[in-house]
Image (cartoon, rainbow, N blue to C red; front, side, top):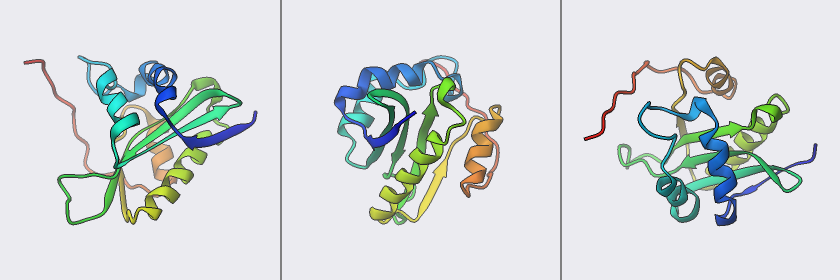
Length: 149
């Protein structure tokens, strides 16, 4: 296994969206996919405040990380939200998520980010454990509530 971490690009859209769509722990609500295709495309291709990385085994995308450095609720603080971090199940437990996270943290620090937070599916212990291992601490538990209007 020869894993390479690089910035994601437009050409990665279909394969990365497929990875996200087939990762149940990324789905935060019961009404929609983990992210609409339009939102995902914007995050990947247009967001100037995003860090979007892809992990590849050779030329095959096997995981991705997306962090957003724009937080309208905290305009006076340079912070980022770790929105998505996932690796295809057959590639997990090989340090790929750690490599994505480490590279993202370097890029965030270069952008003067000093505070990182993440939302984790509370029913998926491996995600919570991973974030804890990387220094994030649990906050209060919330329940996602939604409806189409």
